[in-house]
Image (cartoon, rainbow, N blue to C red; front, side):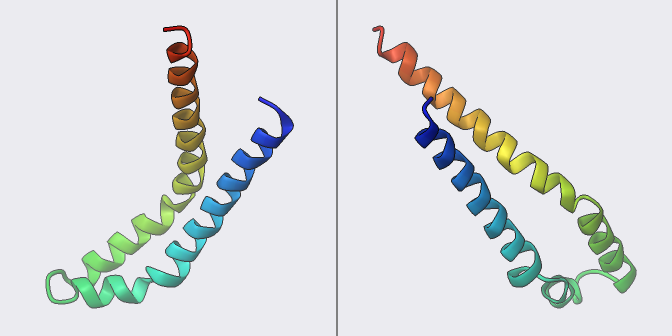
Amino acid sequence: MGKIEIWKIYGIIVLIYYLNIILSSGIISDDIYVNTYSGQLSSEMIAKMLSIKSKYAWLNYLLVPTFLVLKTGIIALCFWVGSFI
C-alpha cells in the first residue's frame, strides 16, 4: 500500500469515530432509552441498562476500527488471490 491508500484508510477510521461519537452522545441519548423502555421496564432496570451501556462504550471505539481494517484486509486478499486466477 502506498501513502495515499493508508491515509484514505485513516480518514475512514476517523470519520467512523466521529459518526460513532455523534450517534452515541447526540442522537441516541439516555433520554431516548428512558422514553422507549419506560412502559416496559422498571426504572431500576433502565438505570442498570444505561450503566452497562456506559461501562462498555469504550469497546465500541476499539472494535470499529479493528473490524474495518480486518474487513479491508480480507477484501484486499480476495482481490489479490483473484488476480492470479
